[in-house]
Length: 80
Image 1 (cartoon, rainbow, N blue to C red):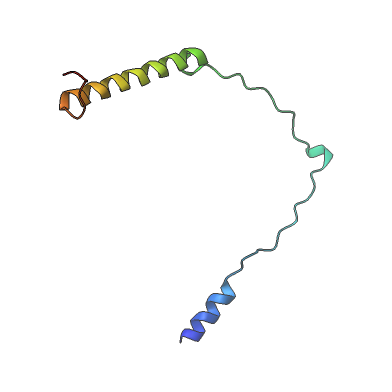
Image 2 (tube, rainbow, N blue to C red):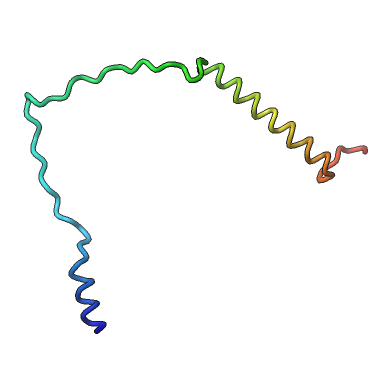
């Protein structure tokens, strides 16, 4: 029984499938030249403005995290 299972498993496994040849594109089927995308700014902001917003959000998260640690007593300021 196990021999049959081993034989059927080994015949069904093909580690390297044979590559199928792809036909070369004909000159009449040439792709059109790529066009330049004009993307709109995300949320109406430039990259610099988005960076400043992200920096402020990081700063707020650090300040709130530090405040929460101080309130819960996990850390304390020196001298107190």
